Length: 286
Image 1 (cartoon, rainbow, N blue to C red):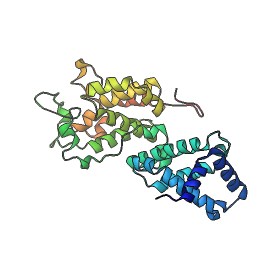
Image 2: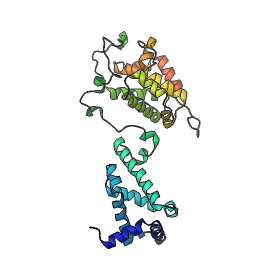
Image 3: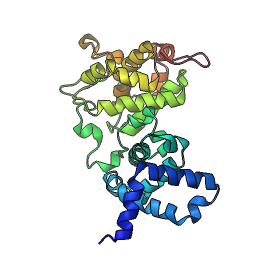
Image 4: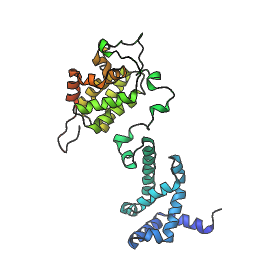
């Protein structure tokens, strides 16, 4: 049961002017004030209680939310704000969301705050699935009776498909023909993530082709983005379905073509190389 003293203290902390006065006093007291001031300790306990539900919503400990509140309370903008608690609450919300995304993406909170990383779905190991991705997703499925047969040069002793290896080979190919490694990885991982959510490569191509947000997040010119989709997913033209251009890099790698074979495909190398974004120093990708 809450005591009268605790209730009075909570009501005083919730008052914007009282909070502003306390934050100003702690700021002016200088180094060590937050560590030794009993009222500061009480304020942090109040923040922990205040944001406990928000922290649990994001799978965090209440004191992690209190830590975010502490960082916000030390800022000059909070002391000058018309509603200090409004500023603090927003900062805690942003931090908790970034913490949750960072845990899911297996990256730092700093990276999780950036749109180019937060756009991706949470990390998922292929081994977490009972069956390999090609076994249940039609975008990667190969049926010798209903799908396109590989050319003579595509035949391999075993048709075992390693999706992770195909993705890494695709990134390696783009890097070798002039793409920045970071850009190539971000783009390919984005494309393959959307591919797993689509019913087919053709539908994934159309959705991605119109995805302006992806272009902005990846900082790619329109021509580079479209060419990348054609190279990775293949040209969505039924007349080219049985050609290398129609299959795309991922398809060719998944049916057993080695990376070295793709690197000897002059048309593919030239197309991918010309599509590599080349920005002047200090310029953006628009």
